[in-house]
Image (cartoon, rainbow, N blue to C red; front, side, top):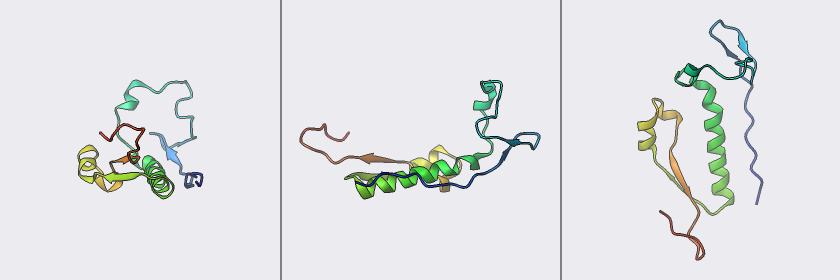
Length: 103
């Protein structure tokens, strides 16, 4: 079985509210993020590499492991405002005699 390798991504520069670059991992040098940071939806393009990595992982699983992949794009459209950027699905191993059946 081949080993999974995450695709490489370009290094992107992100800027704070004042237009200053944010060094990766240094957004809040004081420690924790402010409470309202988790309720904002901005700069969503920063998650594009995550989607690419997830797609590559699913493709690797299909190529190297006996799995069944079931995409559910309709459900994904209900979850996020950018359906062209998301997939929702289920990855299942095939049933074996010593495993529980699929739900």
